[in-house]
Image (cartoon, rainbow, N blue to C red):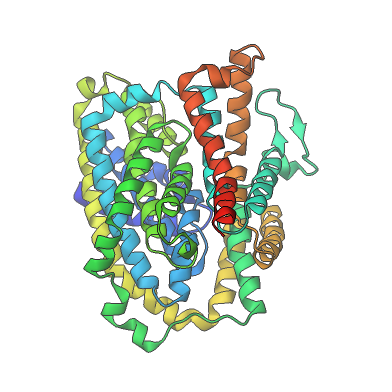
Length: 478
């Protein structure tokens, strides 16, 4: 069983590193391997892949600014700047330690409080989800340091592009000028272009070189110190809480929790201007939220039979295939399988921590000796990653187009975080909004009539007003 956990964790890490795959694709690809295994062994293997992919997604985010999946986008904000400053090893180490701490705590919460937290998720219906998404967008837009108006423009642009494709409720096609657009823009192709190709174009223009010398290869410069770990511990704990909570909510998942964690860290920091320039707290918090969402998303999956994410939806299907019935009684009817999965994830967390820490020198050496060929390598990975999404050249052109856009966004100092978050969550926001109106027969008061929705809406408005109030106060002081 431990060997199966180790193999699953390593396979998941490799899946997370490859741009465009992510945990859902990894589970879908490797599920056939489990056919013929016992139920507990198969599920532990798949759960280890899920956890390993969360660890792996940060590697390319930090080293070459290519997020392995949507949840790893936030790791590029401060992880990649640390890499360019010659602190890539420290960034990888901090993210591994934060991920480990968050994973262990979230799994403890899963083991102890699963029924209680599952009941809490029942209070969230379509109005609350819509309010929650608005809050996420408002938080990330209001806390950016690149201009409030620019952030709002980018969020609106992201929402507009998210409407491309078939309408979920009516089935009507919108803006599908090509058959490839029926399902909308593939956000992974957009991410590959915006972050990776855009960054390469920007670096070529300014003849940028990584700040890596032979001296950076010393162990003291590769591994984070105890002081670094202690300094980011509070951020890790906050990220763990956010990741676990939003992991419980079906559909919210790791993407929203990482963006919100970053917003929280930046909002409470005494040095918010250093975020986006290699601030360790801006990496530790979101990485913790990312891994904590694994334990959180398993809570409704086991306790209610409602998947907390796309990946747990696959796990839910596997549970049913093996004749198990997810829901409130699973802890009584199949305790051996459930507890084997939970204990297996604890072991996977420990194995992944050591594997990632010991692989840091290899990653750094690879970057040191390959830095002169980095642009060509990254472009090759981008093209292969974009093509492998649906095995069409169309996604390669999408990546190139958004790479050019990403270059101009960077030149004109437009923040990409609000754009990406709106693009990813736009369909969920639209579906939740329209489902809420169907529930209320077209009455918009449903968004303020429900207490939970009203509280989240007020919080979103406060976040939107925060930059304006802050600017008025600074003007009054000056």
